[in-house]
Length: 291
Length: 227
Image 1 (cartoon, rainbow over the protein chains, first blue to last red):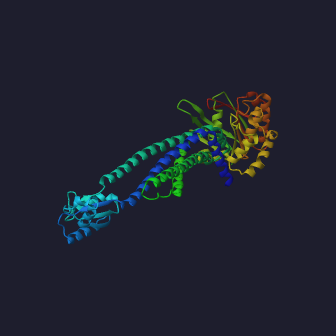
Image 2: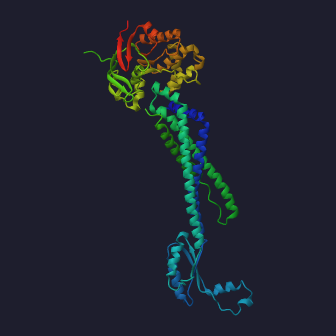
Image 3: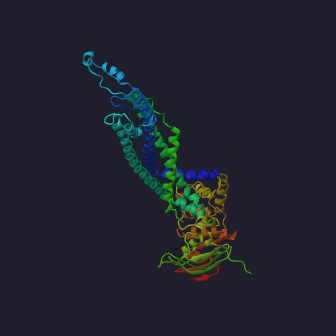
């Protein structure tokens, strides 16, 4: 068995060496396309985690109508805490808020001014994506100022969401296109191998080598190209992650970036590349190896 | 009750297209250990007949049997089992130019699943059998036509087949080399191997006076028993 496997692998290696340029082109294109597709998947994972992390930093301000009593304030807070997507609710009494506000100005400016601030709440979100729904429900709570009583970073959240959608479409589009190109390159590389090794194939068929023995070297070649390309893509992704992570540490207040998932990247992209290479090489040998 | 012939063509036809016929309702029997020449002009059907036996060409009508087995029973995925029952010498040598003589044989042996040790044992024995052991390290381009043909015949013997099929084995050789190759094939035949040869080299065919089947337009037009 071992001698058989070594023969088949040897044949695949010979075939790859004969078309080195095409083999190189196929591997690098698989690497770049899987880097893009893997990178998009990774970015989505990172942004999901980052969104969850920063959710706590996004606050929603809720203002009560003038004249709301303390029991009514308590009831409002209770209603808000019960909403799905809300992490915590803090009451900001209008007197405390005014006292804090006055410290920002010279005493003579605010000396005879009546407290213009309403009672307010700081609402901390657990899930940013639910902000709009939570805001809508809060507006229905009695004694909430429905005109400007609920303020949150709606525009920023929408921007993040739109950016993610754009990233998904552009990244998937370019990645898929490159994956298609790499598939064509693997297909061509294998077809060239079949052509360059037609004499070997003919000899194998003449002496009674099984169909599998004749075909498997090409499948190994295509699978190896996909696998190496996938592993290369994982390495490029790791390098990109390392570069971006160092910038994030320097610029961001979001904390340390998550570590690069080496095992998942190598196994995942390697596997995808290998399967893709196998499929492309199988398609490539179907016609010329018929019979 | 007579035993069935080793090879039997029963009303076999091969149609390449509606207008082009390879074999036309051909019937033929060949006994085990026979030496048979197939002659005829180009396009007569000699190569087609041999290729039907090797399953490089599918017959479109009739029945072909080898050793009692109907060739139609071999599915495409199992044709290698049929080909291991025969040695095939193709019209062009089909040697690997970048491999030495022993490597050419080793390659064929490895491709049918022999281990390195089996290859080490088999290669010298086969090269001895076809009298080319002294050129074991030569590359094909360093060999004469006759020597190359010996290597090709040696390669055809790797499965120790009972049948050898050769398509124009002397086609590219000068007369003296042709005779050497024919003597080698006769030697294999004398050891019990059935040998089928397609040839238009009439001096060689006449010199060795074996059973000769003449084909024209895919039909047998004459047959002579050998001496």
